[in-house]
Image (tube, rainbow, N blue to C red; front, side, top):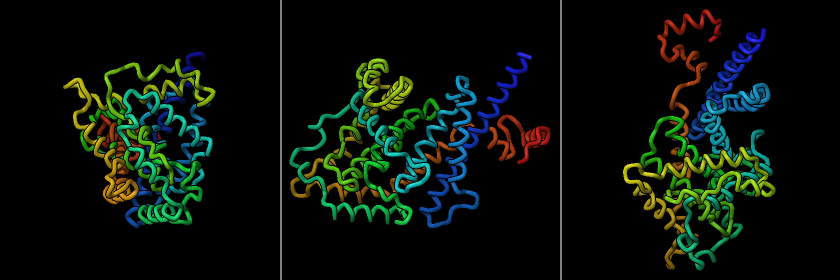
Length: 370
């Protein structure tokens, strides 16, 4: 009886893991498909409304971790979960939905962003970023900010009736909040998918940093472009700048973090840091500094142009619609990278390592309905 109980529990865990893997994939595909259709002026594909699969993930993931506490296959699911978490926040950051994070969640995320920057191995100094005279041009006026917001909604084809009424505010999602998660997706590419980040990937990372700072000043109307948070990515041979999780657990009262949170942050930062390391030279990827400096130059205006005007020119040069398209393409590539979920393979009619005929026979024996 004991062996049977163990076997039943293992089978249940395997089945639930396959279901959750399937739902994570479906939700991500639906979110990206719906956003791409909207960008192209098309209605959401039939059966492609992302609300249902996203809500199913929310429900099933709670069941999964409650039922299989201590045995959940977190490491197997983490790449797809990490991808969905970023995707839902990125594509829905300008609209309010049932899955939008609360202000408490956003405050927590913002504090984590600041905390991670302060402990990052590589940083830039204020002197490297922006001069005092340029800072005096900020913040922009309320009227100027309203025009920028209206232009952003028009450019990204956001229906004003669906737009988050709180955007932009400390209750809305900013690109700066999402930057660490985006960098982590890149940092884990080698481990999760067996890929190597090439120059186009670094260029997109650098543009994400730029867009985060531009949004902060031109859309959120902040005085500080947060360059020290946005641009403090790179490689540094000093390995002990990021303190251990145990060392920073003492700040738990401020950040409301558990040990696991800190350990996960530490792993993310390590993966991102290593992304900028060139194994052949033993140094930072040679052109990363040049890419980063080019973006930072936006915030080093000449006296003739001025900071606000130079940021607006950069916003035109690095068009937000085109930027979103590049990020969506990157996310779509990650969705299809690696091995598809088993249930997706069955849905497509061919399991990895089996012919279509063998897969069809297996589906018939198992009573799979699709």
